[in-house]
Length: 241
Image (cartoon, rainbow, N blue to C red):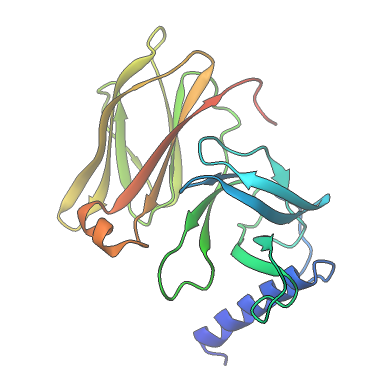
């Protein structure tokens, strides 16, 4: 039976084959998935990805979610960049990040996070959650918990609600209110730890999106704050179907 290390090496080899030879299928076909992506550490330019309509080039934004695109029908997302051909990149393509996608999920949300760990196989990591926000409209606040920890949050001093690890939840501003206190805590060995305690404002025809992720790439930072949190505003038009 192959060892876990051997299986990881095989998966990385298949990804490299897909990047070097984008016309070659390396896995079974499945339905294309709609993706939106956010860069955590600033815009990332000249990113290439294979979509259902061919290879596309984009700048991954850091202050808003990207426009949606549909993946190639392989059950994975692989990001790469064109670079000069070299011994390290004989095909002129640098692998930036890759991840498999959950099966039977029509839409996903991706976080592109820089990975500075010495043992990291790629410069970035891709975090993925199902994107089930089609029903959330203006005045909504939505949390995406990408972490391995349960979270609890409250808006406008309501009773706290829990959000499971790698889960998501939505709450709503009261009619006529456009600002109020938001508190967010995550589970810690010593108990619940508050990581957000601030007043948030909500512009007209917008919703607030909160992204929470583990701070695993920075051990010193994670000892101070176990997670990192981003907040963005998204304009809301008609719900996507």
